[in-house]
Length: 563
Image (spheres, rainbow, N blue to C red):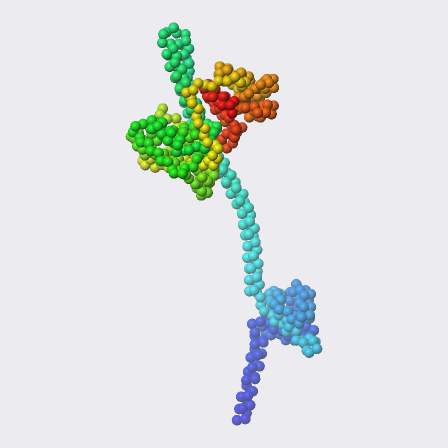
């Protein structure tokens, strides 16, 4: 029994030693123990198997001898001094070289065991395979390299893409410009054809009237005077229609000189109601609805009347079987969202709205898109010029306003005309002169500058017949010479467009430097930026638009002198 007790107590210790020995020898990592000088005392089987040698053959060798050449240098220069200073290092990546020359990537940990005096007693080293880790690291590095390459390619692509997009946009812009140019040329061709057609008709009437007068002057017939009067009426009517056509073309081109003033739109419409009703005819009812508290509009009253008449004519033609035309006025506030949706430039703010609605056949989308184009018309040949809506559009834009058409085929049409609110009460529209009174006369001296010889002669003749003293000049230089020579000149009446380098505005400025306080009246058939600001006359500028009659010339000359 005692022997049995001894075995029992001894067995666990023997078993524990065996387990520890087996753990050392066959651990999943390599173990070695070296002496203070670094020579190997003991190596486990795991490390020996990795190196392909017997464990006993490694005894007495130094650990660096097991490394690759690069590893030896790295160990001796870096990690051996680190081990001596710190007594340890962890996870150092090195390469072991096996007996057959195969390189094995490993991670090495080392610890020195020291006595109480700090002397090294032994060095314990653990070696772990790092092939998978190295592979992962290589894969990671490769992935990073590929990512860097991809990033560089993406940057290059982004750079080239930006260039390609810019080139594509430039090409598209060029194509759009060509398309717009083609459309513009088509519109110009249509405009030119329409102008030529209408002017040829009007010139035929004028020339025919003048020819009739010539024949009657040479004829002894008793009724020659009556025939001449009819011819004069016919020629005058043709000339007035030509002037109206030119005015509409200038309105569409936004070159019609406007004289905007504070205008009560409701009162203007009320005063125009009789003319509109006669224009519409008996089968169309006219209704006007004035908005309460209506603001004053900043607009040229005469051109606004023309615009309303044009809209009424269009509405009449859209209601051949009769119907109702309603003209409403109200205040409107256009916000930023609305003006952003408008294709042309428009300022947000307060406007006076004039809405003209009819119960006619309406317009489809194709017609709506072309409604404002000059000479575009859906009427039969000879029944319309196609300039009505284009005049309304040009007038609205030149006035700083906006026009929009709402229409559905078979349901009718509403044209909304927005005109800027007038905030200056001093710009009220003056009363129209009494055209029935005789032309006013005078005796002052007028310096007349006009490069068109026939018009110069005509204007001078009218003024001489009215009693004025006239100094006539065909250009600015001659006009300035006459001004320098003549001591008394009361008024400069000049065309805006002159040859010789100085236009009418520059001539007036030079003349006023020489004669301070000299009164000036301009005339022009085509108002350019010299006297226009945003399409409207500059302040304190007096303009007589061409064509003008002798009566209109007489009244404007007298008004300019009396101002």
